[in-house]
Image (cartoon, rainbow, N blue to C red; front, side, top):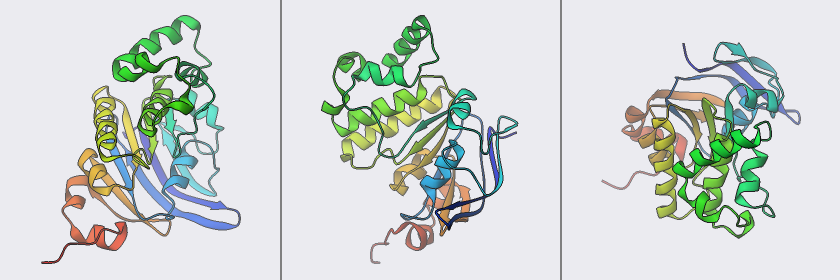
Length: 240
């Protein structure tokens, strides 16, 4: 059974239909990429799974339990971490304070133990723990955002545009981190504009267009299909 199963999901926002009958699944411990041009509904999909939007129709099943329409804090408590687009950190708080904000339910002892685990995965946390997040680089902020999403030991990480606005070397480090998260048995549902990197990291991928799934398949197969990039991802093929 899949860890996450979305069936026939439709979402309307401000009187507009954004998603139309989306169906996808994420296996336990797997990485699934959701690709597509800007404005096709990728972020809306993640926000709906995270409980920030309520669907008009369809089901979202996480580990055998229906979660569609539950408040976001209840979804976090069930084991879904969210690293949103734009990071949404508290710039006037320190790195540790931001991590604590993502783990308010933990006791001080449990938080300290979890912080030690995050230091192993994110060495910069030890180096910058008392530094204000607003003074960090974009790549460092992205690391803090992902660490915050992992503080409650989720089984699924929702990761929205982690490479946005970052330099190529920093993007490579972020994607190495995604591999490390997967190695710990945490499933990842990844929305990413860099289709090449996403497909290289993912096991399976879905392509959205105008709020619908138009293609899906093993990530490697989609990466090798030039029509995918040209038609749906805005990637132009070089001349023959």
